[in-house]
Image (cartoon, rainbow, N blue to C red):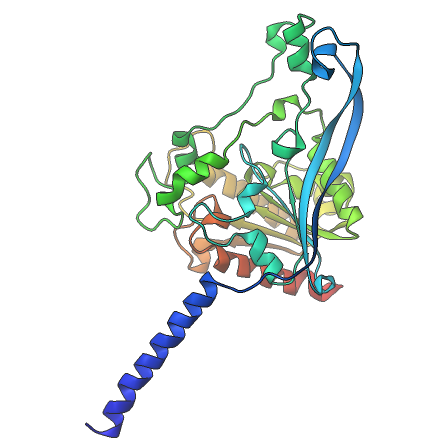
Amino acid sequence: MNTRQAVVPFIAVVALAVQVCAQAREQKPGPLTLESQGSLFVGGEVKSAPPSAAAGPGAAPAEITVNQMYVQYQIPLRAEKHAPVVMVHGCCLSSKTWETTPDGRMGWNEYFVRKGRSVYLADQVSRARSGFDPSVIAAVKSGAAPPSSLPNIIAASHQVAWTVFRFGPTYPKPFEDGQFPVEAANELYKQMIPDLNALLPDPNPTWTNMAALGRQLEGAVLMGHSESGFFPQQAALIDPSGIRAMISIEQPCPELTPAQIAALARIPTLVMFGDHLGDVAPGIVNWKTTYDGCNAYVEKVKAAGGDITMMWLPAMGIRGNSHMLMQDRNNLQLADLILGWLDKHVDNKK
């Protein structure tokens, strides 16, 4: 055997060893070092409550706090280099969306922190740890209001989630190139909780609370997904002073006035959509129409002089992504796209 023949297998072995080590590092990234972590509430208002909502039947009227937003956070060392990122979940979910994926991989929350960015996870008002206003339900129970006053409560079924989240064309058939770990779908279903948004006043307190959190953080990146995908823009229309950038993932984009477009054009914006937008039957959401509407929004912001980017992943050669981009198998690759955008459009403009 000549020297060249000996070198080729050696190189192959070294390459394999490097690949294995890289995979091991990805699976076991090492200790997570934080400067601090904790939780807080943003917003909230005091209101009089019916007796049954305050302390049970027969109790005197009292006061309760409603419309507050629970936020948990992690701040890594040297986080001052980057604007903090506020992540807000979509319909029928909570901030668990951004944590460990259903199949046990690292979620965006931890990954962003490991990349030196403070992350704030918010539960929408009326959801999870933020709680909801029980006044209407209590009034119906006590007879002070008719049953017709009860709110509509949304609870997405496994079958609806499968197609709306674009795991496959029909339940339970997956897309052949699908990126969502469908073998762990049952773990996602455990994350899905009742949506009590019908109890909310107008405007949605989550928008106001997101704007307030941005001010409190002295400039933050607001990130929304699905139901909350346009919440960063709604928060900016209330008060843009604490918003450094807006990231909208897989969301409907409403019609806006020219004045609203001009206001939003002042803030760097990223919009991201996955694959198979036209490959499920239009039902609760028509994803192709949703994407087209957001693409039109992007073009209007560009025409107004805004710094806005549309990342439609198939156009970038990235195939198979579901609605749950942060939980897909390539979730960290997508996180790197967002981090790269932030480096270029936000952090270099401090």
